Amino acid sequence: MFTDEYYMKIALQLAKEAFFKDEIPVGALIVANNKILAKSYNLTELLVDVTAHAEMQAITAASNLLGAKYLINCTLYVTLEPCTMCAGALYWSQISRVVVGTSDKNRGFLSKGLSLHPKTEYVSGILENECSLLLKNFFESKR
Amino acid sequence: MFTDEYYMKIALQLAKEAFFKDEIPVGALIVANNKILAKSYNLTELLVDVTAHAEMQAITAASNLLGAKYLINCTLYVTLEPCTMCAGALYWSQISRVVVGTSDKNRGFLSKGLSLHPKTEYVSGILENECSLLLKNFFESKR
Image (tube, rainbow over the protein chains, first blue to last red):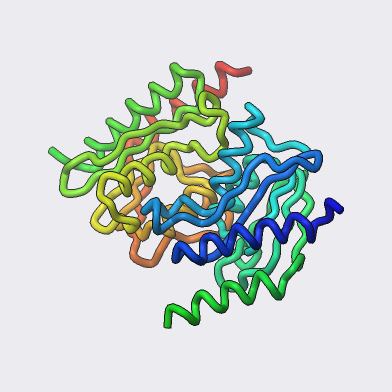
């Protein structure tokens, strides 16, 4: 039951909440031992803060809950490949796994030649079509 | 009077506050039209949050004060070259100037091949020795 698809569906639901708030629709959650520690979605417009990406909020919230800076045994699920800012934060967190929906060819950390922490396992392409379509619909609605 | 050295001295004072709180001593401030909009220092240990670098806090605080996501006509002063996370946040902010004390050869964004926003002017080496010495003293005290 607790597959990567299961959690990515929740991340996608969070991304849809962002969409309805007129935010670029990216959702994230952090899970450890099949428990959800943090749920978030992009809030850069509403919070008027470029640092309020879904991943950043999730990292801060999970650390807060755990009382720990390092997110050992935690998995981040996020609908879009992290940017350099979020990849940098994930690096510092030494998170155990990062699971991504769809890649971001222009602004994703991989296109900038960056890597996550050596301790971090990286998986991409979970519910890729759904995650990608939501973003496409958002940007088309803005034209 | 309001030179880069003037503001870097304030950033250095903030870094010293971090030192006395047993945090890696990095201080930052954001200035616009000779007014200080935000002052901060690294708080990753006290806040138990890897995202609590001086620059991240300063960006959030300045945006909050201005009610604006983009830090046009603002200058960030920071005692140490930003990491990839902070450089990513600065990129999104489109901040007009970034003034750095000392470079970070291992973890700075330049060593990772990253750039700031094309609209951002970058200056480094202001009070370099003082900024560098403070960090050196901190890490020596930890041995």
